[in-house]
Length: 372
Image 1 (cartoon, rainbow, N blue to C red):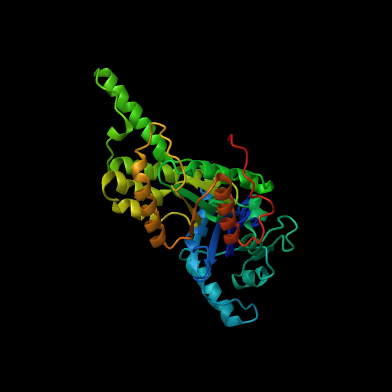
Image 2 (tube, one colour):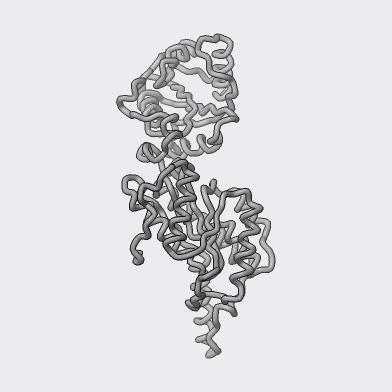
């Protein structure tokens, strides 16, 4: 039999980490029902909806835990009774009408006063962070150092995403793989660095194989890639598969994720093959997770290699120019890389680490082995 009927857990959860889930788990083990109230200020960098969604994902299989969010722009001053009244009023509004609380679980000293204001039992644990030595402030300052304390959805939300894009046969795949290997070489949590392949290339290979299978049964000429027909349904599939692959990799990977293309690049390719980019594609681009850096691979000085899945060398100059236009209008941070393989890797790494605030590359600019 549970000790309490209804326990309350409140906090910023900025972001949620292992210590927070320890608190919720302790409440769930001791109470029939638990309400978790996520309180976020508009000025904070991680949206309230994300924090609520991340916690709900962990506890969605437990019907006794309810997670709700409320915007709280009231300043924090534990000595001011009126400020206390304001915060508690927001907490009460987040509860269902008529609900009472008989226990308040907290890992902060203010838990005693909060429990008093709810006329509930104070359960204050791990104030000194001896059980889970982590805080939201520490996670925000250095996510990589506390990566093991974060659930997959939070990791995906905090991962710094580097997108490599460019025209055909300009070295995008080579560079993206080199970047991922260079980051893995750092060791530690960076050994988990993920890499996301270009789904459009996979789809092209599949469409070509299907077209050739159909032609073979009809005893007709074998089609080539330039004879394939593309429409909005194809690009809807690309949007779906590319986004799914990126999300899976972000959840399973380290603090940096390297992608060989993304939906912004898909928008340009859709324009190329369909004559226009569908509004749905631009809408999907607008909802992508934050990008740390776009790296455009220049076609200049790169020999064109036709592997049977490419349109042709004549399109590369137009594609490169179009990518520059789209990136320039996107408001995203981006660079264009030229030169040798080594020079491209070094330029991309320097831009990445500069954006992450690291003053030195610590020797991680050398090109990894050629073989994946």
